[in-house]
Image (cartoon, rainbow, N blue to C red; front, side, top):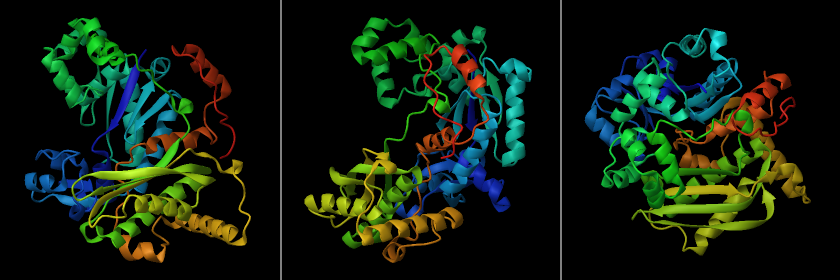
Length: 442
């Protein structure tokens, strides 16, 4: 097997630099607003030279780089570009797994030879990206015999390079690779392994697997395989991705809205987003989850089953408010709010509204959705939400939204013929999974 891993370089920051020439060559950070203590979603190459990294707080970034420019995140812009580079990748192979909003794995075992080899194929993909996305939006490429090694290779390729881990190099790579470099080994697991005397990947490979299983259960077997340069994780192409099981939104609450009335407005803002996403997917939810974080960083919340599955944001809002009230209401200071709708079913399987008022509200929501689809989410506002929440930022990270992109592709017309699919299923080392209907419109 031959895996190619695509990782976009400083993705959100480079997209902003491509869109705004005045930001090019400058240290910028993409984040929420600094006054709500947001974190760095992406740092430009120029900011990274000062030690600014994704995940640190905005005040830490300012301390490291006093002249850094903060740019509010624009998730619609990033998702749009992700869709574009995803479709570029589909020109090369249907075996594409979207790993995150800015990363993808490709199984190029069959296609590499058609493009002059893996390196030549990688260079062509980079050229296609440059032509379609702009010269400031670059990607790094790692190539190896499995996903774990390909992801390690891409780190050596950064920025904008290509690195192929050849089989004869693997032992040396395992000897020098620290544990936390591996995606899937977090700080806590790394500390536990270090207490066992395991510091490098090669140490894992030499350590008795029985002890790893005793300490970590089934995960111990995966660790042992990684230590030998193997990876049991299959590449899951986009057409095998599971359907969405929940829809949710969360938001850190700005200081001026942390009072009960302000928090109520933020909650309605979040419920509007959940309802809109349910309607866009043609889903209705049976369970509403609500959570808040107070000034002492303590979380409170619960869940409630609805009598009737819904995509109505007002019904979701009322359920969330009831959950909040049953736990004492909003505290004097609410620092974070979250709403999630689960137990989703197709909207077409629900009972249609019987009362005139319900039917009118449904038509109104659909009309508002059409306006926002055409002119953007902020083209039309509910008055109470606009008064308090017009400056809130949407989620920038896009975590999980790659699934929405590939699910949309599953129900659209694709470039992959049935014959091509069967060829890949026969060649795949993993059990075949029934193809979703592709040649129909969503």
